[in-house]
Image: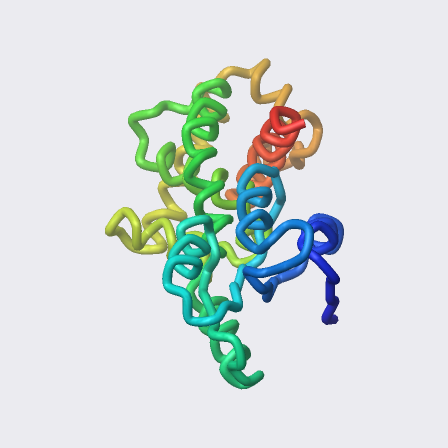
Length: 223
């Protein structure tokens, strides 16, 4: 579906209510301009941030400012639909939006503290990988459904290891925590959501629960 907004204020409202995959916006708008939209999106907590494509005339200063504030790309006014489609395809293949990546980076320290609170040993490689995964999923919920195709490969590329190494290390860290972690903290975070027959969550179950908790914490702080 495609939606249009008359001005910057309405555009931000539509972004927050509709959670679009991508937003194509002019840097010159009534009410709030495109730069205002980017600034306000940077300050709110969302489960996923859309790809932001700024449309502008050839004014390098505005274009550079938009990219610095979190736009994924800038398109020159008058570009045809095929150019826009190709651009959006390229952004999707690249990975999460710039705003999602930035919010994940901001949340990384909080994700590490979450893991310490449930008793996960910080010397384990899986501790770092899991903290990265939780922060990333908290700012881009689609990654949870693409764990093997985008989430693990993204962490692996950052850390210089294989996808399978990331998955195994996270699994080992979860198993170690379920054996020697803080029982009360584990129950508080995971409650009765875990299958009692298995006794411990899968990688994606663990990431999902912790990412949701992290997202809710960030939302309360913003409010």
